[in-house]
Length: 313
Picture (cartoon, rainbow, N blue to C red):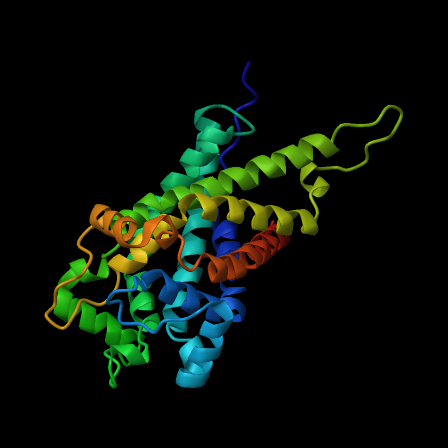
């Protein structure tokens, strides 16, 4: 027996605003970990063109000493742009798609599969739109001394124009294949987040015998601390499941060698070559600085997102 069909309430602009602000909030504070993660990911021990670091702390110290504070924040502009745009698009589309599916299937609450599909649909669209920004960010992050005395890109706009001129539109869409596979990352995270949120609401809404239940809406049963914990734990779950695809994407988005030939030609070749020369550990290079950045970042993002959404609503 189906519930009453949910009513269409219009475009989810609140989700877009909340998602955009939430996407920006943790990026600046934790950005140096992203630099370290990217450099670890592309360092294959053969000819990656980036310095070798012993561990996360050594990498942070070395980059700060050799390249200065600017080195730790290389590619920050496209990171801010990409993060804000991605999260705005994702939350906007996810909220609209979720509401559409509630109406389509005549349900007040979606199950895990429909949450997964809603997240995948929203993520695919956002990935196609923002891929050029992430290519530029990766290139700027990899401009280490090992690439030569003169850095190939002077700025975000210079990198964008240079890639378009030298490699064409295809250059700006390198790594799109694994990027689309990584849609599963966002979909898995949102599924885990939504299911955890539903569990908390269901568990706390059960009245104890003889106790009055005065909370007016189910949403009030979930606290700010819950949002932070759910955001971080759902991100951890998604990262462990999909991290190898992130390594593959970073390697595909590297700048080609001087002869214009890319060392990694496609997703399968990159995966196969990494496994052959570096083993399973090669597919998880850089995961420590990545987790140090994204888990607290995701906790903060969902806390900010839910708080702003409540305020706007």
